[in-house]
Amino acid sequence: MDCGALPQDLAGSELFGHVKGAFTGSIADKKGSFELAQGGTLFLDEVGNLSYENQVRLLRVLQEHTIKRIGGEKEIAVDARIIAATHENLEKAVEQGRFREDLFHRIHEFTITLLPLRKRPRTSRSSLNISAALLNTN
Image 1 (cartoon, rainbow, N blue to C red):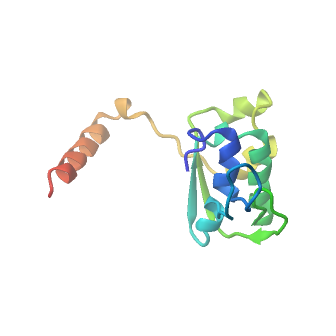
Image 2: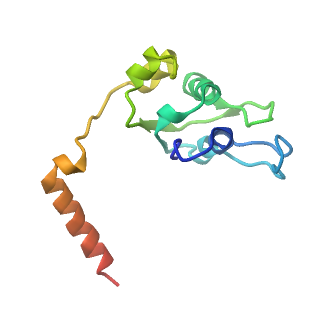
């Protein structure tokens, strides 16, 4: 899920779901990404763009393994592995008060740092060859 591509008010609904009537236009209950990823893996891209409110909800999921849909009261157990990515320096965001320190420590179990493709010419060429081969098949 690309957290950076969603408006802040929609991100909560997409991640955690909502109940009918929770907000204008919510005409039915909707499962969020955590429920849909039950037993699997949820990839959160640009996690640094989450609002403070959604950071609190994400921290709660990581600590308690439960969610509450937007507008809901029922606790829903979830079991999903989280992989989080961002181009932003989250340590700096924590220092500036834009990202919760406790959430940072929860998602910062280990880091994989990748060079940009422009600095990996062999990888770029390989990726292009694979893409070209896939596009040329009918």
